[in-house]
Length: 206
Image (cartoon, rainbow, N blue to C red; front, side, top):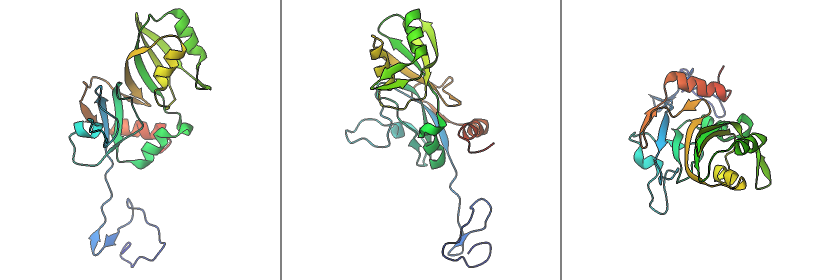
């Protein structure tokens, strides 16, 4: 039944606005859930692992089924978004929306002015330039960068091209989301303000 009348094949409905009954019972709209996790090292960014390794799903304590958006290397730490909102997930991973990702990388060599300048100019990785935004020296051998890339191991490959190696990597920001003070292994739900900010960034609302 749709709004008190018998529904017909092909008829459309909006779960937020229309009254929908199946076998006399109202259809409940799935509530969207958004979680930020500070992924610890050695945890894999997937729901299940054929090798039996610990996954991000293993370390969050909620009954609802959520999935990680994108990937974060097994040996990297930091911000992972988990949600059951497929529209948000798809847009965050689509190149069109250019979701920025901010990382703090500890390198095997000092961060020099020359390294920062090369980062500003962009770095070729596998025949494609990676545009690097706002490279900032954090301390002697640690640098913060923002990129829009989602290729596997792209940050590590980027620094190899510059003659150094990443010894430790943490993602601190994903789009408008910030890791904040979450400790490794901790997670929390986004606030309504954060959800709105995320949806605006993905052009899902004004």
